[in-house]
Amino acid sequence: MKTIACLLVSNCFMTYAWYGHLKKGAADVPLFKLILISWGIAFFEYLFMVPANNRFGLTEGYSPFQLKTIQEVISLLVFCAFAIFFLKEPLRWNYLVAFLFIIGAVYFMFYPKGR
Image 1 (cartoon, rainbow, N blue to C red):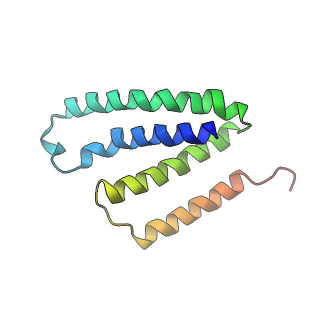
Image 2 (cartoon, helix red, strand yellow):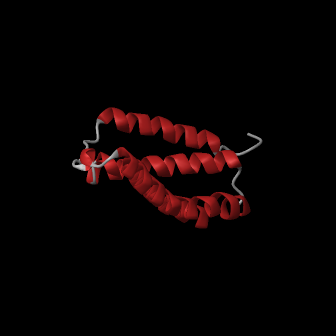
Image 3 (cartoon, one colour):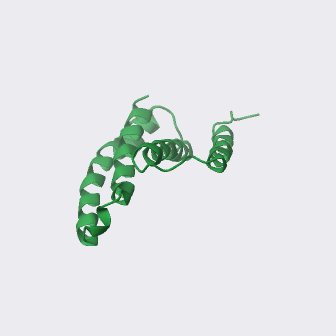
């Protein structure tokens, strides 16, 4: 459970670092300044991402493939909420269908061994 919590917090920082500048008004900020701000925010992402993968994830029994899959699903969920509520982007039906396919991939990633 520590893995999931750390990945969730990490992805909140990551999403804001990568996409926060897409909010209207950031186009006037010099690119170099946006990059430095993003790196500063990404530092906090790594404070949670590294323990999630290296300390908690492996000790909680996840394989590296499973950790990456969990991270990607959390990343998409966080980004979806961010895009809707922060960037005011609409959620379209085709995005939901794409997410369903990703959920299918998660199913197969965690499919029990020996079946």
